[in-house]
Image 1 (cartoon, helix red, strand yellow):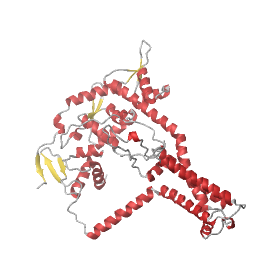
Image 2 (cartoon, rainbow, N blue to C red; image 1 turned 120 degrees about the vertical axis):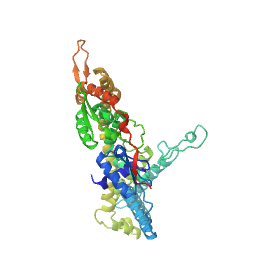
Image 3 (cartoon, rainbow, N blue to C red; image 1 turned 180 degrees about the horizontal axis):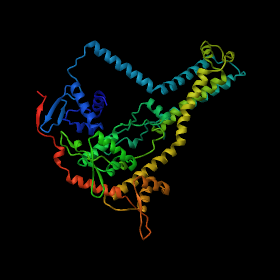
Image 4 (cartoon, helix red, strand yellow; image 1 turned 30 degrees about the vertical axis):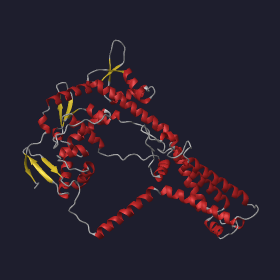
Length: 479
């Protein structure tokens, strides 16, 4: 990784870094390899005028008195104005990109309302083959349906009202007014209605950060069970991952007399703060759930569906009535509706809004159809992690695991009985073997995890606290 790329990754991960840092501290907080963290810190030192301290042991401590800011750079008025203009244009551009669905949807509502106004002015007397009075009735019914949808969506006593708060819910225990308001922009609700809730951005180095945190909390010594605990990975994936991390973080492997493998990362223990390291939460403690259908309130969903239903019906009417753009313009010139020429297919007010509106309505319907499958996958993953918890806890203490305990763990997490094939696959992924017993009870043993846990426990007892300390400062660039 280039020094600049590593520096920018550290800048995002460290935030306001005004406390002393070693390369190990930076690697732990960012998930970068030690060599990349060191290069990135040197790049940041040059960019933000940081300082270096060198200890008697040769460790380098990095300090950034101004954080990741450059107060010595002063912009003139023109530069500030251009910067402000750039931010404004960028904000407008981002809004248009994020809100284009809402813009098009509301734009067509306004267009159709304008058409209705034009028909009110140009409506002729009597009925003809285009159904003058009948068409006006259809328009009236559509407007009534849209107005009813708006009324029931926003009326405070509606059971599906947006932001509905009953009178007795507006006060807390001390009589103070409290009103929970949904601050989500409406354009974001439209996007969630169509495409589903946006997933939180995933940090590509989050897994490495959790592993490094576990390494530091374990005195620089870990086993595969520790890695599986914080990542949820099966054994066959955790093993090659540790091989890569040993290269990135200057690790080493130790084998006990019993054959248990432990991984040592003494370089990761060096810290400028000497704060006690805390282990990250286990993978099974993080909820695994299928995302909600839209993440909106019922009132918001009803309103969005009603608006698009209105647009879809109006587009069908426009197609049936031949309301091309030229005919709509003629309506505003007070040309009677029955005298409008047959000007072809209404594309702008017919085909396009029909496809657009149906797409907005059908996409969430499709997601609703496949959501049970996603919920089933989430339940199976919860069950696998629950089984992993039982295996890791018992293997560390050297106990064999009864099959009934794994079945119960699966059922608690997934809500139903496991398929024997799925449960057997999870056990094999974790390195389990069937134990031969005279009483006929089915139990599994995880010999590798047990011997590794003993080896790691011994290595931690033998680890010296001096590994985590930096020596006395013998040189500093501070003045």
